[in-house]
Amino acid sequence: MTVLPVIVAPDPRLKIKAKPIDAVDDDVRQFMDDMLESMYASNGIGLAAPQVGDDRRVIVVDVARTDEDPQPMCLANPQIVGVADEDRIHEEGCLSLPEHYADVVRPDAIRVRYLDRDNEIREIDADGLLATCIQHEIDHLDGILFVDHVSALKRNMILRKLTKAKKLAEVNA
Ligand code: NI
Image (cartoon, rainbow, N blue to C red; front, side, top):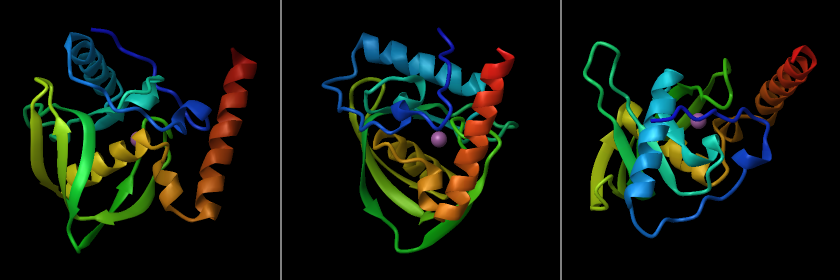
């Protein structure tokens, strides 16, 4: 397995609309495994293909606590087919917006349909942190970052700081 470098915002590759895949074949499975490896290497709970420069509609999540066994999930072509009326506020972070966090409001529970690692169509109900995480990752497939859900003031502040940090990194490289 390969740890793929995670792209940090602002970057045009994070704004793409990813494309549906035809089927989960060996190539996609390998990619899913690499994505899981990359997510775990960064202590993340979710990762979407565009974050590693890929334009396929593939996400991986694992919201298990550190004292629990891993619960890796691989979702291809994930689609939200139902949402609860109740909302949930969660302070979100993102491997592409390192060290920045903001409260985001999303439906508390969702039903999601996807192709699993074995190319089977699955439909699951998710709530709480899992629901938040899956919605955050599906957003990535449509070029949406969690900062797009907060005020322009907060978004611009975060993106400005990330731009500054990138410039500093270039100077020091
Ligand atoms: Ni993210």
